[in-house]
Amino acid sequence: MNNQAFVTLEEIEQARLAIAGTIRPTLLNASPSLEELLGVPVSLKLEHQQITGSFKLRGASNAIAGLSDEEKRRGVVAVSTGNHGRGLAHAARKAGVRCIVCMSKLVPQAKIDGIKAQGAEVRIIGNSQDEAQLEVDRLIEEDGMTMLPPFDHRAIIAGQGTLGLELLEQIGDVTTVLVPLSGGGLISGVAAAIKAKRPEVRIIGVSMERGAAMHACLEAGKPIQVEELATLADSLGGGIGLDNQLTFAMTRDLVDDVVLVSETEIAAAIRHIYWQERQIVEGSGSVGVAAMLAGKIKSAGPVAAILSGGNIDMKQHHRIISGEDVDVTQEDT
Ligand SMILES: *Cc1c(COP(=O)(O)O)cnc(C)c1O
Image (cartoon, rainbow, N blue to C red):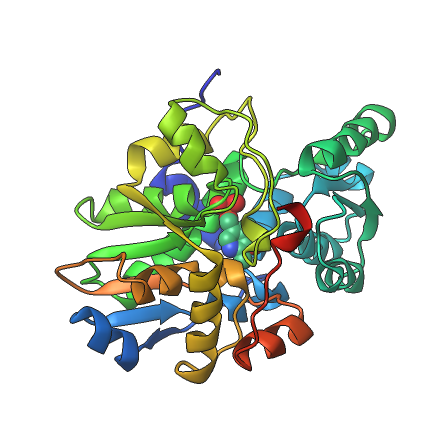
């Protein structure tokens, strides 16, 4: 590992200016039902209402804004479990830049369609993000395209960090922030922004039990290979990269704790968010609420949870909120 210096508050503030015309600020909603459960005020950051259905548009827009004219002319390429591709495709189209997104066969059809609808080319390759990465490497080598990775990149992290600044302005007295955690781009940016202004705020990452890569890497003390498994939180799948430059160290040093939730707990959260909060949120965006409902979060003061995305297959969502058992884990157990 050859770690770069952490992304700074200044970079995040610059990102905010760079993406102001591309993203929309999202609402923060109080949740009376979760407040009753936890005994402290709980608010939900409705980032699933972001354009393209997730916060990934923030990082992607900032990364595209930072490209040279020559890089813009050659186009951008990414490997993605869906939402990064969607955000990148939208940001690229807005900037008039060609975009190719490569992804593994584990990605649900709804997400593939979503990316195509944003105007990007999609290539489906292999059974893991690592295999899809080989095609990206070829496009960089042969066509001179620029890869924009989903999390381990300064401009991406700074873009995601704008969500932290926005949140602090909406809830100045927050004491605990729950952040869905996969590769750690979101939590690194949010933690960098919030800790720079209010170091005492606790930042807690939440991942699914099945294939929680960052959690396993933190336990190991270094980036390690982690098997990708089917999960309701499909946007949280995939490894952090053995050559991780930024998000491993930033998560290790800035994040206070990581909590894991089961498939049953994620399904319960999707249901709660629908029936109690009247929102449609995907599994990955529901993990903070899952942790609260499961009694895994204690806080002396106000809690905010980021609902990070809403791109769920609507038939699957319908089955879950109707109380059916939806078990996506069968295919690999
Ligand atoms: C990508 C994604 C995450 C995780 O973000 P990382 O930066 O990889 O940690 C969480 N929720 C949703 C909906 C996502 O698309």
